[in-house]
Image 1 (tube, protein in one colour):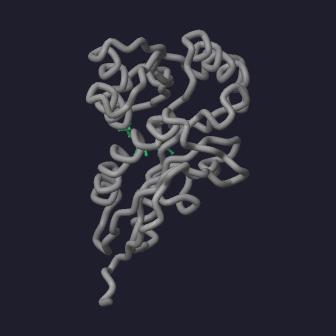
Image 2: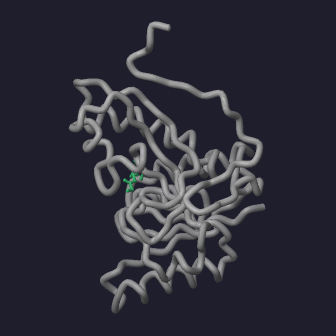
Length: 215
Ligand code: GAR
């Protein structure tokens, strides 16, 4: 069974979708620890409700980024964490953690990377006027939302969309694809070659457009 560590800063709905996927049997995994940088994160309530250990670690209590991310890495290692999940963790993860978990840190981003990285991906996409947007699960490297892409889901974007309307359409897809990406990892089906993630046994029959095409 795969041992997960989750980092989250806020509401934690993606964390919840992972918990639900474990409890339904879709994911053969357990969450050993939630780490949050925000003592008020609703994700803490979710951890408590499901009997998951949590820790609040805030950067201001550490002398620097290295010390902060080394401590997080140590806590995760102590609990046997094999895969680290960034479920709405609103910081650029430090090298000290990435080095310990190379190609074993996954993030979800609310846009189709490499478009609209950073904060407020949904708002950036709505303001830009794209016709499709979506979300991306990727491995984390030292850059901001730059690591190898595992799964993307698309949603239509409409001219009258706001950050909230587009964001809630995207969030539904986040809750679907994040557990799927973790499951692929748990099944040993993900292989990183340079920038590319090769998924063993994937299907190649996909097409989508918005607006719909006539033929
Ligand atoms: C999600 O939309 C996630 O994609 C986004 O924060 C939200 C967290 O929601 N992450 C980022 O923007 C990271 N750059 P949640 O706390 O309900 O899972």
